[in-house]
Length: 305
Image (cartoon, rainbow, N blue to C red; front, side, top):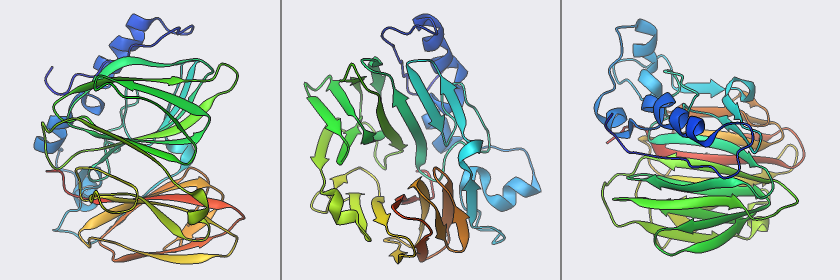
């Protein structure tokens, strides 16, 4: 099988043998894990009026203007429970394969992970992918083949540009509590570059009733940067607070992921861990419907290179 070779080698897995988990991750995910090149070059779909109008896998179809959004309710996500790891997948990943949920534009993976105390992902490889980790709770220890060793925690943002190839591991540093984090993969706009690691600590108070930029394509902007025309923001809002988000690039789309609470975006009601993808718009009207509602906005190109 061609494509990027990714191996998850897991330490101390009590519920699934390492070899079985490895086999399922590599072969069971098929296109979901390994077919990154295929995603960009081979997006064939059987003639189907519904899919064509939607735009296969949430890629805009310029021939139709009948739809410009997709709703992913929290309880429709794929999932895995390996004992030491509980994960929810907004898009196809490992054993979860849904042909209608391969990606949103260049947003390829959005995993909502909970890792048991002292457990984690052993050394595994990545290539030609921008990998963003956002800790929500606890401490995640990172080591990679570039010699970086770091701890990331709530308020931190980490980015790993895999480029021409890199290996790394991720573990829950603590032996007495879980770690919760989001892992996000974005297909880059250039391949086989020099691998790069970056990590920053943000002032989380700067997202109170405002949208705090945490990622962009520009090294001099706020947040981390990646090899893609993408911008990420996080906002934490009081009840009934409203804010408008203006897209940086009108050809982009936005995938909104509700971290906590209840919200309305462009008249669409959303609850905790719901996802809403929108394209062919210039702005989003966001309103909080509960106290301490929190949202992650991921503005990304809608066309795969």
